[in-house]
Image 1: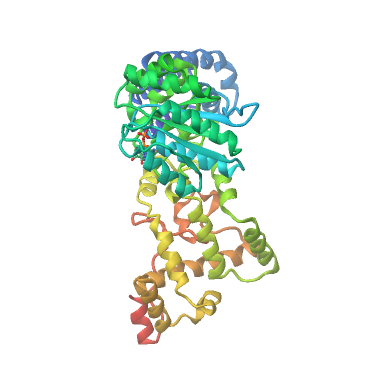
Image 2: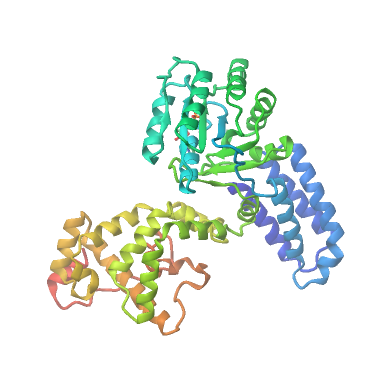
Length: 488
Ligand code: GDP
């Protein structure tokens, strides 16, 4: 997500940090680097120019003051951060609810932008907030768009109003109108209308979208745009702004190798906020767009606020309360606790995306490690624990060679993987005991040290290449069968 922009900003700042006292020449240098970074990331030239001019002006104004502080580069960093938040839209913009339900949201954009997927993501997001959305299939053009919307709706338990088969059959304006009426009759408080796109902008597309707009009078028209589109995204956005008009932008495919700058230019050039972003194909890969959090990511400071929100949503409060009570009582940390943590983590989505929200994780070597992170390890670990008996989960010490071989067979894994899990779990258990004694969290100070990852309860180890992982212990067993099993 804005990766190249982020890494260029980071290197520009690390050069500035090494300077100590900052001179006006240093400002010229960093402003030039920022401008190049923006242009390389597809930010429109005029936006890159006005952004860098504004940073230059504000930095020079603040220079004397900044140099009085113990950390002058921080002052400049804060100016850039503030400007970046502004270019990203300033405030977080939420959906405006209609005074009288239903609130009608119309999605527009080119074919392939991700509208249909987004309709499902948005509907789920609204449903999770206690709303009762209905999806309306008004894309009657793209092959299979109607069935795709029905499948998406079914997968998230949201009704889909689809009276026409699509694939060129049916009147999208009538469907949209009837969809709105359906929502009113059935008391759905949100209507999300999926409309047809084309491969490129054309008059027919604009006419149809305008007719749907006039027929349903939407409260929000969202322009869905593929963040990977480059400068074309700006041209498309301008056409949609003139042809149909829109209230906000949804950026999709931010998970890809998106340089993303063109999408950023839309905010400045068309003065429309980015309201949501999609970062993957799964329905959960979607969130409100917070300009301040995105600026923070671009500047390498991570996005701890989103991470905390996701953790809160994924962790069952009853389970975490029970765990805290257990911990306070002095009970030992068991594989049963370990399993429930794993399940909560799985609910939070992709581990590499999650870890990428931590400060400093999305640059250089850390980023490479995150890219290699294998999310399916959580699933494998879960399978191994589920193949254990309750007694084994309560006390791993009873796991002799025969039991380990049985567990490996039951979970379809190698004995070495069972051994590895037991080792990691034992380390986690030791860590919990130490924490209780007030000994701190080994290997986890601020989570900055990735080598400690394997020791965080429930956290699988990082892939090869992590030199900080503790060396694997040699077998100490005197029992030849167990030794053989341990060696897998
Ligand atoms: P539509 O023509 O605008 O309705 O586009 P679709 O919703 O069918 O999306 C086009 C393709 O992009 C599909 O293969 C989607 O799975 C994929 N897609 C949509 N959003 C995202 C996203 O945020 N990230 C990634 N990687 N793929 C996406």
